[in-house]
Amino acid sequence: MTNPEPKSGNPIIEPIPPADHRTATESPRQVPLLPSMAIVETPRFHIVGYSVAGEESAVQIPELNVVFDIGKCPRPLLVSDFCLLTHGHIDHSAGIAYYLSQRIFQGMSPGTILCPAKIADGVAGIVHAWAALEGKVAPHRIVPMEVGDEFEIRKGLIARAFATCHTVPSLGYTLVDRREKLRPDLLEQRLPGHILREMKDRGEKITYTVDVPLVAYTGDTALGETLLQNGVHDAQVLITECTFFDPGHKRRAAIGRHLHLDDLLEVLPQLHNDLVLIAHVSRRTGLRRAAGALKHALSKASVQPRVEFLMDHAQHLHVRAGKAAAFVPTEPPIIDETDG
Ligand SMILES: [Zn+2]
Ligand SMILES: [Zn+2]
Image 1: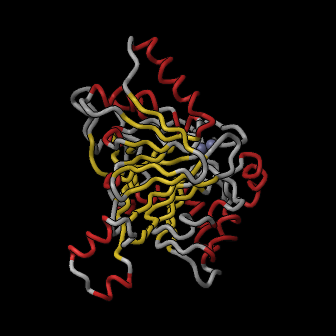
Image 2: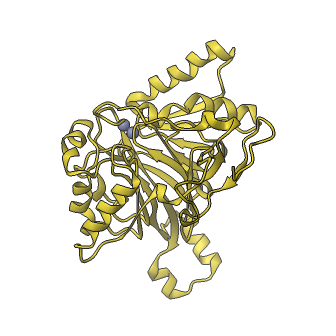
């Protein structure tokens, strides 16, 4: 026996060793202790989250104070004041009641949920139904959104809804950095501040608006025009679903209105993102095979944006079996045709 048993009921937490340090005979084997949260660093913000088709999707941009979808509300995601819900499938929405209630329990301000207008009553219904169990309604705000609607997260940061195409009412969201800049003709004249103030007081428009799409998140969607819309194809970071990769899964993708790798490859030359992050990969394929299929496909393409898998950035905490043997995962069940 090479590894000691845990002395108490608490599992031993330790980082997973590099794969080449393990042997087939090493025992007991290590298994994941917690769902693996991905952390991606970009020049302006981090992307933190978890996304597996049909199971859970919740993706946070901590610096921008938002979480896209709230599958089961992993604890770090609680601190974002705004939850931008793409649609009501449970792998994207099951954490709503917990997110709202737990924020109050932890002394935070009431959470705000942006959601497709068609499901706003349903979201409110869930929150109020939970009051029958908790004895009170968690303070909250629900903001119904339509395609093109904008919501100010904070001064200069806008959430804008864009059209997606799924089996239930759905929206994607772009976070836009909006700045007012001095008109070029006025900039050239180098006018002093008090003159500019006087012009402004007279009602003259002395600035123009510059929108920079920082990050777009699709949620679940079929291809349609989704990825080619303004604010999506040109966002600095695009977080898009791509559920299926196997050639034999195109029918599943069509039925569930999800993206297949072939769809993504079709539009990839038209994407101008610095980084495309793929989320919502089906366990039917698994990350390793999906990555192989993507790499093979990209090796034939001449120009493309940087494309990575969100869950390839997962940080693993593992546990040794023993008292914690209950953590050993079983084979995932076969899920329905739609994969959420
Ligand atoms: Zn869905
Ligand atoms: Zn889903």
